[in-house]
Length: 214
Image (tube, rainbow, N blue to C red; front, side, top):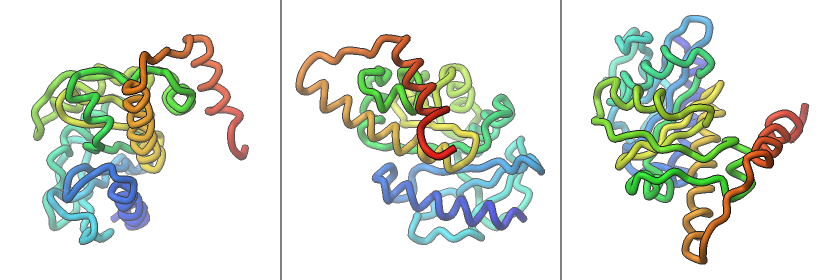
């Protein structure tokens, strides 16, 4: 089932260690097939260099396994919760990328103090509360706190990003870590200054509707 989506997820999963967003078996990517509504997700505890397209698990929106010989990610129920509450989302990524997770560890959002944050997210990257792994609790925190952002920090845990596609969610995860590092480095130099809200809105609109090939 969904062989093309499994292949896409296999390739996108390789971007996580490539961009230093995960270590060993941590983190995951999922994608929802818009036609069937089924979700493809990484199997639990499988190292990225050993992961293959056929290892991915297909589940329904309640997290019940539809196809797959391996157990799905321990975050599956939270991914499914997000999909059920955000019909516009077809891709989700979870990482423990170090700089962004450092902000999560102390429960601080990443402020809009550089244009890259305004471009990609259009707002500060917010912080959700603490929740235990294995149930829908993390997904509930994501839905309650992510707002209009593509990323949210889970307090004392890590990062969740969303997108209209899995590729868009992976890009958001890469950008979250990139801007987190820049902001942390800036904080070592001195006091940061946030970009005015009206300029953030203009930057986000330009990046979303003008930048790139149309």
